[in-house]
Amino acid sequence: TTSQSAITANGKLIVVANRLPFVLKKNEKTNKWERKASAGGLVTAVAPVVIQGNGLWIGWPGVQLDDPNEPIPESDPSDCTPTAGLRSKQVAAVYVEPQIFDSYYNGCCNGTFWPLFHSMPDRAVFSSDTWKAYTVVNNEFADKTINALKSLSKDDVESGTPLVWLHDYHLMLAANTIRNVADTLDLKFKIGFFLHIPFPPWDIFRLFPWADEILQGMLGCDMVGFHIQDYCLNFVECCQRRLGCRVDRKNLLVEHGGRTVRIRPLPIGIPYERFVQMAHKAPKLISTNQQIVLGVDRLDYTKGLVHRLRSFEALLEKHPEHIGKVTMLQISVPSRTDVKEYQDLKEEMDQLVGRINGRFTTPNWSPIRYIFGCVNQNELASFYRDSAVALVTPLRDGMNLVAKEFVACQINPSPGVLIVSPFAGAGEMMHEALICNPYEIDDAAEVIHRALTMPEDERVLRMNCLRRREKENDVNYWMRSFLKAMGTLITEDGEDVQP
Ligand code: F6P
Image (cartoon, rainbow, N blue to C red; front, side, top):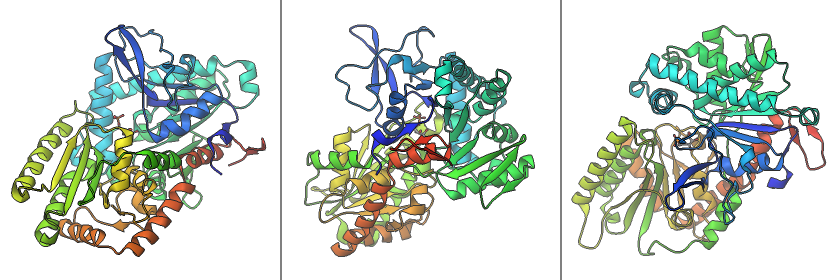
């Protein structure tokens, strides 16, 4: 029901995201740029629709190009990832002067919006300089998008209204600019936005000094999507209280500038079948005489890693029967390493792992195995498949795909247990997981104990339900839901589906 080939946009799809679906790397030998594919769910779902409809993906190539007009290389013939078929003419790399890009990305996006939108205002830095850089970069993305709309042929436009799809907190201003300029040029298009992180409650959002501009920027869209209903309601409330818009909470509508903007909960999924297949093929890497409690996260303060390690320590204190038998495997993927908060967290984690291991390690066993680095997809599938427990305990998280990837990989007849935080979007809908408040360290230790000692029949029952839901609501379902909400989905029998 969710096969990728059935998903078609009625009209050219122009995806606009901070990152391109691959990063460019210089080959030291040839001195030429090459693509390095990304494996994320967004790329898996969206890239094929861009490829199939000869659309366009506008974004940052992950490096500062030497020359702004540097052509994007074609993919390597051996590339078998979803972006392999994306021709270089279907990609537009945004070039911004390095200093401005740094101020936009490390400063405003990751130093202000990231903590604020995750309801951690004490970590947010408010600066008019980084905000200025944010507006400059958003205008740059908007310019590229307008150029793309302008260069569409008459046939392109007549065969279906072009669809611009903006992604995430990096680009909250662009829609309004695109709409204003495009209107003066009489360009026909639809425009939608999807936020991949939480949208905070009014009382947090109002702390941002330029809050009006953000709301106006997003309201330049025809439709704005969030993962869950709560984030939609937060946004609607902010529009009403900050801009004085007329709103309809029941139907999630906001009136602005003589238009009605639709707000929709569109929870993202994962490429479920791909993870199942990987789990079947993955090598065995974990020895069977240990129960593994697994954590997989970008090294980010929103992920609750310090709380998680303390809970594991409390487990060993309160239930010493697990000593020697249970090991925590924490994979922390380096992220945003230029930002001080992330550097500080790295220090704190290194020290905490050292302290807990120093306290409990025996000649034959250590409580924590800590990987600071990347693991490949096969290793990941193997860890997901063979772990007894997955600890997905962020302090706040838009959705969290690790929870979903873990259940997809649970193909063993005697499955593991998922523990999830109620403060992640995933915690809202994965009802059969064990719910654990990461702030309650002792209680979290008890939840881990319960997971480690759960009878097999209960584990099977819970995991079957979790897996069924993720299989049905996979990333292709999300892609279809977005196109449907925009009124631009063509079904298998060629019918347009209205929102
Ligand atoms: O979850 C939000 C998000 O921006 C994702 O889209 C992205 O994969 C992740 O955070 C990592 O972010 P960055 O692009 O800053 O490395």
